[in-house]
Image (cartoon, rainbow, N blue to C red):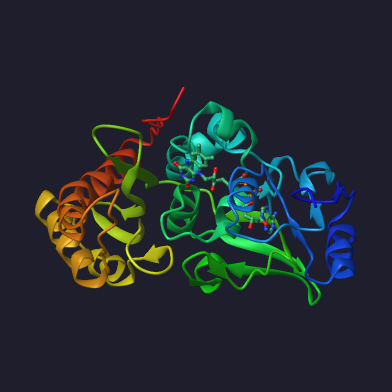
Length: 301
Ligand SMILES: Cc1cc2nc3c(=O)[nH]c(=O)nc-3n(C[C@H](O)[C@H](O)[C@H](O)COP(=O)(O)OP(=O)(O)OC[C@H]3O[C@@H](n4cnc5c(N)ncnc54)[C@H](O)[C@@H]3O)c2cc1C
């Protein structure tokens, strides 16, 4: 058998779910295919009888504003997110995280939905969305429901979204508002091929000169995309001084679980990177919240 036999481009979410059900575990969703096809080709996952591509479903190739949320359809590519003015201003860390994924060829076809569905602890778009408080709309045999992203991850590459029976239809988050902003940073191997070592994203809301609330995501820092909840509580109510942000990084180090990856970085190096980069990431979010100006940085050409 080739890598797949049948390729479907359904017109509705319901039709996509119905096709998956018909194949009873022998079909799965495909976005840009940048993860999936390599995995099938390299024998890391079984060939599929059918692939279901949601990119032709009306509206799912768009970014919209609905009920106070910014909503990203399953067919939206990283390039589309990076270029969207509302995303740049109100979801800056997501633009910065999607903007470092692969190169332009990858970003032009790969989707945020695919990045989240893959559920890797270091998925860049996943880290950016998690920091923003992202929710995913999942369609499956039990209907269509919204879930906070952090409730759906269960292990490396594993989530409650069974991509052979369910689809992520949409992703949404509340846009950052007054005195609020976000930022993302990723550390790469300084030489050789571009291998990310650690990424982190922060969303900060200020109330005059103190932090009203913060959300911080780091990856890889555990078995699932990691939300640094203790550090988030630590920051609430404090002035975002250099000392506070440095102390926030130390708090984060108490709650992360870092591992050594032979080709990427040792746990000790990752620890130093969090110590050095988390204060800068938080500081950038604070600076943007104070100025009201958010110009994404580090986005690939
Ligand atoms: C050269 C290269 C460089 C890369 N660099 C990076 C990087 O720097 N950072 C990074 O995070 N990733 C990177 N990736 C991985 C990949 O490009 C991203 O994870 C991408 O966002 C995956 O999206 P996709 O649409 O291509 O997903 P696909 O490959 O189509 O699918 C990935 C998984 O998600 C499932 N899926 C897809 N869409 C849906 C949906 N709507 N609902 C439910 N399940 C779905 C599929 O069944 C599959 O299990 C790289 C890949 C390549 C080839």
